[in-house]
Amino acid sequence: METKPQDVSTPPTGTGVGTRERVVRAASRLFQRQGYEGTGIKLIAQEAEATLGSVYHFFPRGKEELAVAAIQYGDREFADMLNSGLAGSDDPAVAVENCARALAAALRESNWADGCPVTATALETLGRTPPIQQACLDALRNWQEVLAVKFRDSGFGDEDARELACTVLSALEGAEVTAQVFRSEEPLLTTGRHMAQLIRSRS
Image 1 (cartoon, helix red, strand yellow):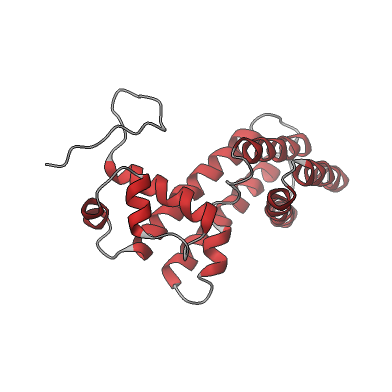
Image 2: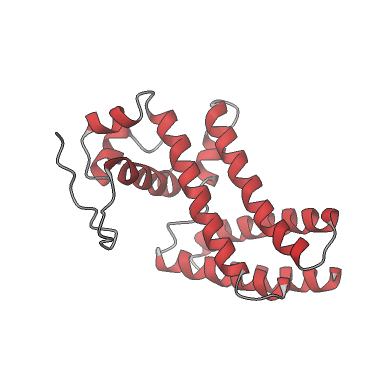
């Protein structure tokens, strides 16, 4: 039986983190930072402190299958961050600005490495790997719906909520990329302020 090394990047929880979870987390971070094409299975196994055999045990169809799981993990992680930021205020304008601040802080803490968990993989695999494309599409739709729910709960009609959610998500995604290139929080903070103004103007 394989001995599972301790995940030193995660505080002890009493139950530990299983090999599959470590592999998925490692893949998510590596795809996020250096893209799908630039990340090999061997590197993922190394980062996860797992054997190559164990990676193929959990993902027998290889890197594409693992990429789908990694994107789904990033989807949940990013949605949790959005939900946390949005929950900080009943005012949707303030809540969106809070989200922009949280994204900026997380990006700075990662030394500008951890931007959107799906962008690099989505662009690299566009039109070539349908399962990965579908996972990326599902993630973006999920994040847009997280925002739309907040706007609907704040009194916006369905159409306005959908349009605002699409606009805000697109703006934040673009601002994250710009912040990474500039190595500065300012693009996200500025975008957050302007999105807040837009939301107030539509109220």
